[in-house]
Figure (tube, rainbow, N blue to C red):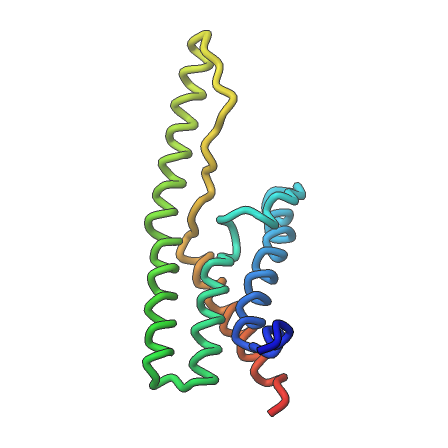
Length: 152
């Protein structure tokens, strides 16, 4: 088995491509909303679109295209994708909301008290359902385009 054969794994290429496209799209989307460029978005979790949703949806859909949507392998990929998307929109989203609330409490304490806190929790940990939905759509479209471009 040659290490270069990894480049012939269209499911892996679709997943990586969907993740990269989602991360890159965060820059212009953030710029349109906030009128600022934040290069850190290329490497950070959270934001629009969900790269977590894009990568797992792309992998699951690509597995379905190649192995069949009626196979145990697709079922496993689908279940894992649902868990990741649920986590991104549920648990991590709530953790982000908690971080925002804690940051506001710390700010209030700092303004009314001589204590100064320079550390902030990262507030954008999870995704809204809309961000996850857009990520899923991006993942499926990316996997389908790469599937159509394959030489059979």
